[in-house]
Length: 519
Image: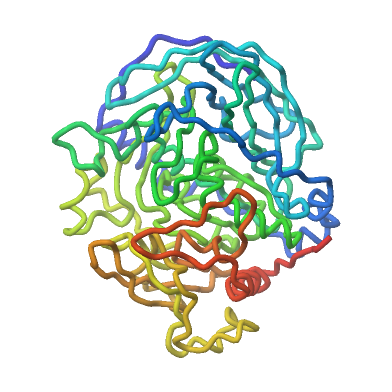
């Protein structure tokens, strides 16, 4: 699959058209399909366990990484991006690479998982390929940076590639420095778990090449503004917040927040299939084939189509676990690139649940202000509150110690898992029939301002369940895979893998009819 012939750049559509397009998606997109009654892991004979029994390696990790400057987000010596966020077996993905100086480049592809505790399996070597320095695009309208780098290499995904997150480690022959490209291989089979990667949020925070994230702006706009645009047609620079993670060059936020859950699920042999935010946006059987939908880590930027597709799937019987914080906070419609390729650009167009008076002091105005956008708590069970960051303990709520979620943990009412809440979380629980607050406590940010986080669980209409762990740090309590840099934020930090977090997670999945299939 190659890129289409470029067309002449065209200006962004007017604000009124952007509002209309987002509102068009407010209707439920497709009916939810019937959900599998039996654990797919059992019927598939442990596909993920079998995959992880193959020989793993720790060589997926970058060894030598050199930013352009000590404080830079770029590594111009070697960098690249992919033509698509996710592809299926039989489809082709293109790699767009740049090196300084010109060099032959090798792309080593690794599927990420458990693999005897090594974290990855080498699946393919592409190259060496001749690569030249490429032009860094000037900022366009609304600060947009879109690379137009030529296709360096193309790769057709073989039929035996198991769904997963794949890192392409880029190595040169003229120097020792490395970086990544990242993409998702999805499949079409019924699966117990759909692991949604938060790649919209990865891109929202991507500052490549300098200060070019959704959090960078032109005066007099507020930092959380509604004007800046970002594009998927550029490399991922070093992740700019909370952790100084050298392995984030080219990998977005996957290794920061999502890999510990991937690593743990695959160590337990859970039947998991991986999707992009863009697959949730597309909806249909890309979503409804799963028994449990997983929102992972830092999952802040959703399209309204994503919201309605997940809402519809829950109504149809799919369970969901929001093992994340700050989830579905901002409405961010996907639009075409300036040369017409779909779903390559987005911006912060509105606030799910609408801006509070306090939030209006910090953010906006947005294109969709005043349109009564749905509240994220109506699917999550709680929502982002102000102050929306801080640190705290994950504490069992009064009267909840005997809840099925805590079975086998030994936890008592008022008992805490230290430091597990951060750096963003959910509060203000929704008025949903049967919703229970299972954990709650105070968070404190670096300005000593407080908020209240609430973890919740509620029953769906067809025997399904929705769990909101209410913290970006949840996966830190599940595992500590190779390469992980534990976060410290607002003077707080999680303590690492915890048997209680692991048991709570497996209790919820078991309640949804999902069992592990160890090797």
